[in-house]
Length: 422
Image (cartoon, rainbow, N blue to C red):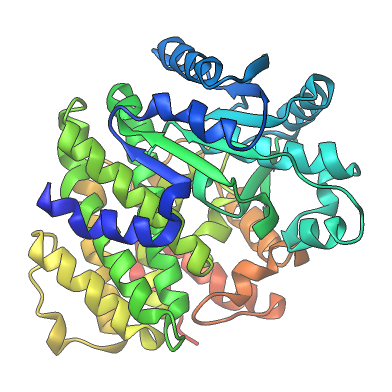
């Protein structure tokens, strides 16, 4: 469709021939994998209809001349440490030439991290943060096995990126590896796989993609890649805000599914251009009560007010999209500063409400003040400081309670007036 021409052009610019996406592309997993190895381990998710798709992948691998060394179970949501340990041990035992992951962000992230541990050993804690895998590989004589990531959910963009999120279920805290070394060298996303995705998963993934684009756009202000990021973010956010409500009403809407797939792929492009910040950082402390994308989307209106004085360009872009799609009636050209942030926050809340999604933490079952305390403590953790420093209003650990605290209290109640600007 002509509506998608810009998105497709941007993704071709991003990944070229290393990425195959669209409808009916699963049979291409085999040839892509054959260019990287002679035997494959398949790590796969289990969901309704997954067996049919996994069989198609296995057949394509065998047709391309690869021996399938084994088929492993993927990771549970949020890639728990326990699942990471299991997958690491199983991959080490199989000794395949290439690993093919078939799953959502959690399984792909777990495979990325498992390959790091298989090759380099040690604890996963050794690799959290930025560039620690590359540092460990340097001079070690070790190399990571090739990874072909086959995405199943329009969500995190894990199949395209340098991120691996791993969760400690005992503390309900997520941490991440950020490293170019773990980017899958080949990726595939057949959007037909998403046609049967439940509403909750569909919404969560789409909102994660929007959050990637919005947060990176904030961080791009004043940097050389800002104009490119404007194109990526504008297209992704427009596609999600236009199509998500329709897809939630009509899950078999193929046009809408393609829109969400392209939009979240652009979210993956975004987080390879720059980093996320406040909403993502806080979301890591809400995993026991909310899905990741939903948490980011709930928090972003409140961070918009906090960031407003420093990011007028991104907010005007978002406000313009919201006005075009009917989420706002305010003339953003006559608005500036904190007021602009409030207008955009209200538009984002309107979008969430139209989609039937929570916009205040107090409406989320299981929420308590303990979640705010956990989030503030996590924001001071040195292993997560890249998110704190990447905010358009950078905070030090010493500033977290004074400024992030009111943001989270506002998110709990829905009262934007509680937010303090620096």
